[in-house]
Amino acid sequence: MKVKKFSPLKAAKMSRLSSKVADRVLHQKIGIRRGEEKLEKISKIAAHILRIIPFDEQKYGRSVAYGERFEQSISRKASKSLKNPKAIGRLHCVERCNTALGLLRKAGIKAWLARQVYYDFSQKEYRIHDYVEFFHEGKVHTLAFGINFDTRKDYFAIYNFTAENILADSGLFGMPAMVKVLRGIDSSQIGGATDYNKLKRFLRNPFTVKESMAEMKRLNLLVSSGVIPKQALEQIKNI
Image 1 (spheres, rainbow, N blue to C red):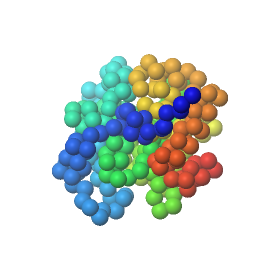
Image 2: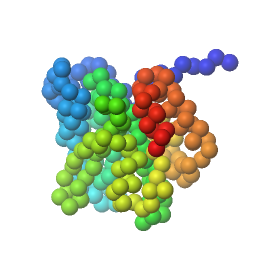
Image 3: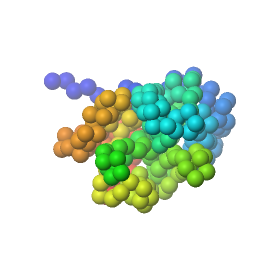
Image 4: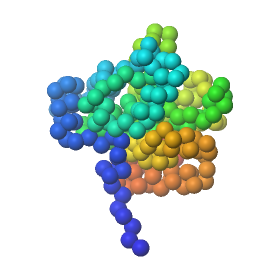
């Protein structure tokens, strides 16, 4: 049986961007220039994403409206977000991360999605929070998007550690033991969760042997295809 070669470009369904769209956004709207430092490029891209995909509490803060927006945005591609920017509801990180991944790759920065799956004790269900990881100066770093509910302002942060440490340190959602991070080229590759119904099915039982095997396969393929450096994989496996 012939095995199809893994292609990061084919796998990146949610974050794929055409060169024409990406070049216009990166150079004309974001103002990225040649020779800029990696962290400077990432900060500029993240700030632009907050501008085009802001948090709108008045429109999407209510539980009903939030659910409606979340269902639409779970399958929203990076190209659609850039061409037709819309405000989002609270804690919705999926769309921002997929858009960031598309722009980072077009800017020449290797990055991948880190999807935290955690048990929300208050809601008594599994939920997700997405981050973008990249390798810099010998360490895995994490780009995180969030909302400060005291000031009602969007923010992004870059941490010099993996996504496992962010939620565990925050203490917002319960016990660290109930947290697992899955990695892929973008959200289309993890648990097959490319729409809201698929995500709900995935979250009914996310920590299966099948998913663990799929995670190992994804990581190895991402390394062999050059998306994740070997040194980064060693750090991830040692967590």
